[in-house]
Amino acid sequence: MVGKSILNLGVPQGSILGTLLFIIYINDLGLFDVFIYAEDVTIGGSKESAAAEAASMLNHTHDSFTANRLLLNKKVMQKMFNGAIHAIRQMKKSAAHQ
Image (tube, rainbow, N blue to C red; front, side):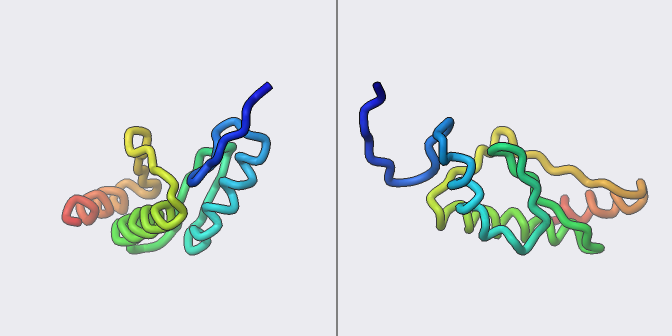
C-alpha cells in the first residue's frame, strides 16, 4: 500500500491523473501548435519569421512552465527547422543572431 503525501507543485509521474493534469497545466500554450504524446510536448508553427517565432515560443513556454511550477528538461530539448533548403539556411542564420 502506498502512503499519502502532499504534492505542492508539478505532476506526479506515473500517476493515474498525471497525463490529464499535465494537459491542464500546458493548456496556456494555446498560442502555438502543440502536439502531445503522453508527457512529451512538441511546440511548433509555420510562420515566415520562424527564427523570431521560435525564440518567442521558447520564452512563452518557459514563462508558462514557471508560472505553473513545472520544469523544462533542457537536456532533451531540441529545435528542428523544416522546409526548403534555402529557407532553412536563412532561418538558421537568423536564429544564430538571436
